Image (cartoon, rainbow over the protein chains, first blue to last red):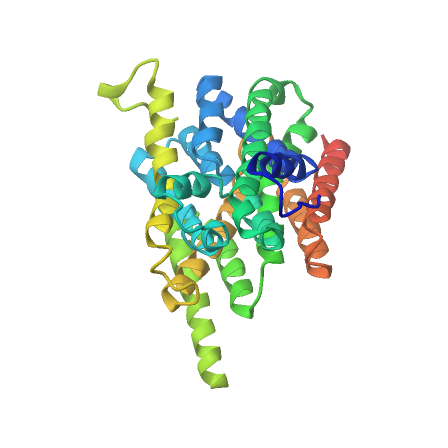
Length: 242
Length: 118
């Protein structure tokens, strides 16, 4: 939807919500349906499932959280695995904030904006925000992210009660949305051979280390090792060119 | 199943656990980014390394979800889960703007295959 530069923040906020509701918000909503069912599997109340969507706002963190509880991982291992799996938010947020930052904007406002950053809102934000007038971007992004969180709360809530009643292929399909979406958007973002190396190494090392190490720390180790090797690859190929 | 920490156990435990072990470890990076965004050069080698580690980690999450899947996904065979991933991947490689089609294609393979098998 076209946003006119003379619109006030309320109208821009609504435009952001409408753009989110045109498709992206529903994809996130569906991908969090599975989280609701996982929370139910470990006997946590529906409120905790919805709270995780509002507070954590990161599908993989939520899936790791509930799936690790089901697997009996130690709390420290769960926290570490989630912290490392969420490391991506540091570079992602650093990349997005300059687009929405305005002179005189408080730190609190930036923290609120940063909270709405997840894979979907980030990729869509990077794509849509540059076309807007700088003073409108924060409202637009908050509207966009807010609509995504709202539909996702609904999805988490529905999943908590519905997934158990669904036929197995459909329930499996909902749980598989996150991995398919993540691998696809990661691959769509590949800019250099080293990005592909990081994806392939991460994908191959994680299951190997899960067998060899386990306990929740396998994910961290495979990520750091795979990522470092990909980074070294990039440095070497750059030096060869220079 | 991971048991609650004994001295904090109670009706509020699930909420406390979500806050302490899922919210804080995730949100801390967004907060740090706000604090340091001005000082970090988006093209610095350190960020490049962080980005590479984050990418590998995310791919690791994908692998974990597919090789040791949660809930109903475990009822479908591994080759079908991998076929669904490969379908999405093939669509994205053919045109990288087609992420939504990739998700759709992968889901059709998984759900369709599941329907025929289960």
